[in-house]
Image 1: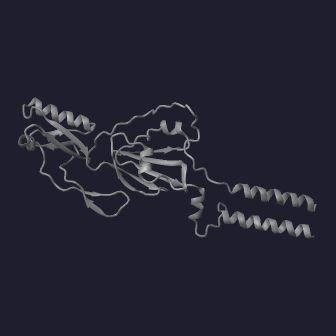
Image 2: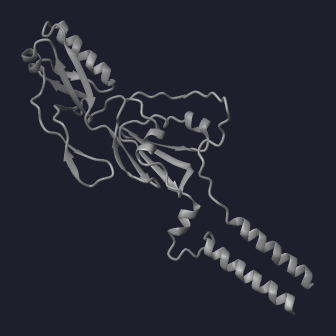
Image 3: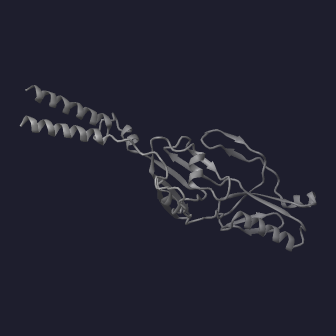
Length: 267
């Protein structure tokens, strides 16, 4: 009887020790040498109401081109991961109104919602040339406020700005200093709003194929990237950490089991 109880408690102890596993932290566990995969959703950034654009027109005649540029105003920019703000280089900024239009000098109202920024540049260039206003315009369109937010278990959470048109989820996480050791690689969410619609995508960073197949691989303006905590981190957020999921709970239980085993042996 004592022998069977002894082996039973020993097996219980082994099971308890095995339950305290180390979280997986490696990315792309399914990648093999020579593996070729394809991005399934290559989404372009399409302009929306409330987006801000910097538009500059230049030509061989500086005085003429200045007619089509807003008066230069200083633009206030907040840096990601910081509560303070500073002043950037000067730029002229257009805000897309609720009708999806901007009011451009001389040309008047231009519908730009739904366009890519190079399409906006081409539209303005065509209008200037077509109306014999400027013969050789060079139109530059840049994003003035387009950004995304990174939250959760990353080293530098905050709001970041788009550096190029096709910015990936991996780019965003790199800009935020990568995931912490407590971040769940299998549970990265991208929350995307488009008008009155909100869509949530879940991405498993341990699977390259899952990442490349996700519509969230390329980010859109105002996306929110959230990295959930892993089980170890979640256990640390309890009042005293001593729950059925906590390491201290299992250690205490294992200590009790050892004490019972020693007591039985001494009987």
